Amino acid sequence: MARIGVLHPGEMGAAVGAVLAGAGHVVLWSPAGRSEATARRAAAAGLVDAGSVGELTRRCDTILSVCPPHAALDVAREAAGFGGVFVDANAVSPATTRAVGAIVEDGGATFVDGGIVGAPPRAAGDTRLYLSGAAAAEVATLFDGTIVATPVLSDRVGDASAMKMAYAGYTKGAAALVLAVRALARESGLEPALLADWEESLPELPRRSLQAARSAATKGWRWDFEMEEIAATFAAAGLPDGFHRAAAELFRRAPRIDGAHADDATLDAVMRELAR
Image (cartoon, rainbow, N blue to C red; front, side, top):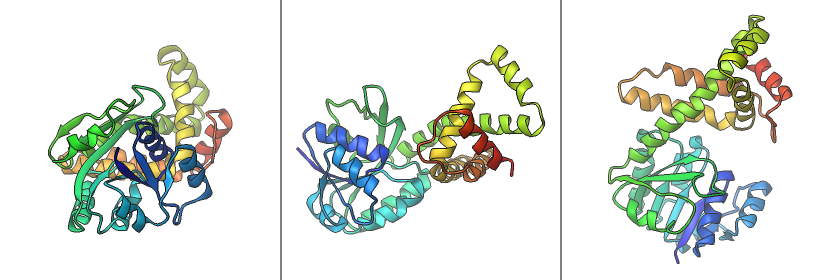
């Protein structure tokens, strides 16, 4: 049984924490500065209230950082002085991951790079936590027997993050593209004609465009930074980065709608903002 801290239990972090708690580990979180919604998620996941982040770092052997990508560096700074294994499992570029690693290693921690692919874990096959770094295999064992797969890629920090960037570069980049195309057709007065053609030639796209609108409305506020991180990853590899920078702009323009459904009303709200 390990003592694992989760910073901070959003939808993904709480679900991963629940898996670890179900495996018999003690999983802690800190309510300092967190919302009531976060507290409810943590309680439902069976996480233990550690009080402050400082107390969490004192009591834990491992810390798992799962937060919006723009907060990854700040969360690492919160854990300054932690001497255990720090896993950054955020949607950030290899360069940002290495910066996070430098922060926590300066404070005495062992750093492991992580990249979560898939949905929050509810059943086997939903979620893969890719890992890389010298202590990656040690972290993988924490999930033994659980529904979360933990492929170890290498001992190189940056590989797990690059895997996440490549995966999300397609899945979330494709969501931005289908939204942009439908917005163009609407602004050109050709949306009904495009939808009719899609129904015949690419029948999955009308549904995918609705799902993309829902994602933009509920998650665009954090996906925009993720697109910038993906763009930086492309640029570092000598590849064109413009598409994902454009995707970031699309997600920045999307309205923020809590609890949005994949319906025409959400699509209309998103389309109004995309073409402004």
